[in-house]
Length: 273
Image 1 (cartoon, rainbow, N blue to C red):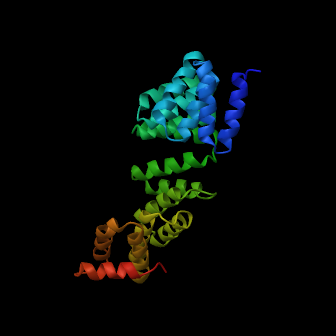
Image 2: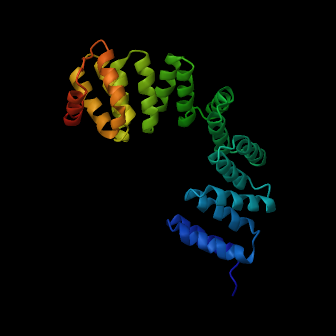
Image 3: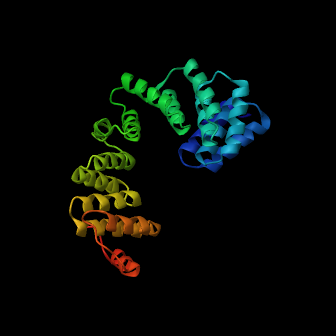
């Protein structure tokens, strides 16, 4: 009995969900050899290839799927993500607008806000995030992104308020880092240090958080703890040495290091306290 496209999609989906991406692609290709334009198989093949980072072939498959089913909202959403991955923001936004027209859903609105921000259209991105937050007041990503945008605009108080709201529930290290930066700019060094420590707890290899933690500790008058944080940053990313040296000599509680090799030795042997 000949397998139908639906049969192959079920098997390929099961393989994909089990992490067997090559098997899923092989199944899709077998079905497409028989039915080259089959939209479900092309859509699934595009999704699997996107998961593998194979953008160009994924785009070819999603375009083939849309050629047969142009009004499939899920395919439009995937096409938008693929276009955005290629830096084609106008194409991505066109797909997203079509997806929203076909089936207004949260994912499409969030993707549009992300795309506008990546495209550098800050005012439109802010409007998009604010529209999401108006409908879903507890939407963490919208709150966090608006906090970051407020910081970029120099509205530090609003930035801290939004970012504190975003971190009231489980949040990624990047959001804690942004909160630390906003608090630091308000010269709330102790609170900034707490945010950076949380970022490092969530992402132990976050070199920028370790660097900023060192600066916050130094500015709060704890140079010994600052050296520990700088040592961690240096261990994670040695090319930060210049930034560390500058921070150590520029703050009011800084120390003057005339011997670069001596500073490197201190950083190589110290630990975060």
